[in-house]
Amino acid sequence: MVPSRPVDVDPGCFDPRDADLVRDPYPVFAELRAAGRPLWSEQLGMWLAARHRDADAVVRHRALGRIYQPRQPEDLWAGFNQLERDSVLGCEPPRHTRLRGLLGKAFARGNIERLRPHIHELCQALLDAIEAKTRDGEPFDLIAEFAEPLPVMVIAELLGIPDSDRHLLRPWSADLVKMNEYERTPAQEAAARRAAAQFGAYVHALAAERRRRPHDDLITHLAQAEQEGDRLTEDELVATVVVLLNAGHEASVNCLGNGVVALLSHPEQQRRLAQRPAELAATAAEEFLRFDSPLHLFERTATVDVEIGGIVVRAGERIAALLGSANRDPEVFDRADEFDVGREPNPHIAFGGGVHFCVGAPLARVELAIAVRSLMERFPGLSLAGTPVRRPTFVQRGWSSISVAL
Image (cartoon, rainbow, N blue to C red; front, side, top):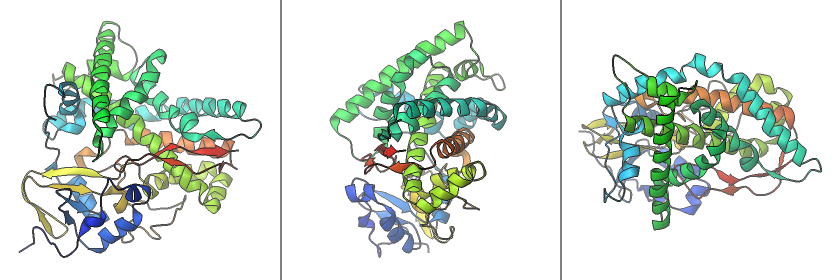
């Protein structure tokens, strides 16, 4: 009989609220992988899948899904719950299939490829501004000046958010994504409720405007999208736009920041990329995603008993795919703890897998590769000008500030 909860290995070393784990989770990931199978965490009340094969099975298994549970009390969390309940991330087939079908055409590879010239223009404009401000060699913040504004501008333009309103997006998103973490303050929860209400109301109003006066943008497309006579409801439209704005830039900010810190910490790889940026930008972008992944944990719930890696996840139990650990698994990646901008093949699972594979992955890949190439072509000698400041979060892994100099 396959054991349900083996207890011979204690995963107590894994606590996503621990500052040391947030700082450097990779030694703990290695301990978890060494067990050879998923482990039960009594503290978190869930299984932990740390190996690549197990984490990949978790994100792909159709019986492991998102079981929506509204936050309580519901009257207090009504706006936030609506955004989670009606988004493509918050449901399973058949509803997920319907929502993704209505959304997927907008993120088709052909549509994304047409954005390449514009993304390149945005990168050049940001780098021009940095160069103009730093002619005397003074440091600048890579997050504030480049990694953060670029994906915000890309997803905002794709959706059709007016220029005058774009400053609202990042604060709303930052308040909402804190709810993905395992430790939150009452003030952070209150901020998330306010952000949900304000963000939702804003998108409701903008969608209504697009219905009256259609534009050539994604919000208009979503408002008009139809598949076999079916359309998004108003709540589904709002939730979809909010999740696209959040997912469309939050992970990109973190991925670019994490990758640049890794790059500048490996001078030989930086020289290699700076010498051949056009050739290596795409593989470097994939290594950014693998080496220090922007999303470290993807949680699922079993709808029936499921066997993963030699254990049984009982119906109703939760299991977390530790994506950051899976992407450093030496069973899959040669020299898994080494940073290699030319790594091929690179079967990381930073975008998840299965029916919940990131719908925006084609856009993220194009955006990241253009950003990497543009940065290295313009500033090949970029260097760290101080110790980067890490965000105190485990699930969404990134830096809040990276001081660099030319």
